[in-house]
Amino acid sequence: MSAARKHPPRPELRTFYATLLVTRAEEWWIEAETAEEAQALFASGQGHHAALGERVHVELEEMLEES
Image (cartoon, rainbow, N blue to C red; front, side, top):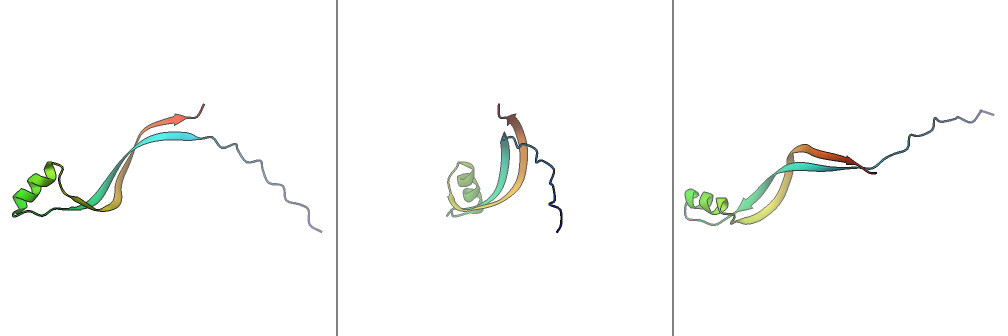
């Protein structure tokens, strides 16, 4: 009969909250007569959201420990 294995005690887990700045590459579309008009419309906040896209950058802004 083998002896029971003893595992070291697990450290107590704590909860941390963070504020992250996340940049995504998203796909949008708009109908326009020229590329210049399309750029102006996109710049003014118009357009249609096609897909969320992938995260391309994540930056930690602030981290707080639960008290």
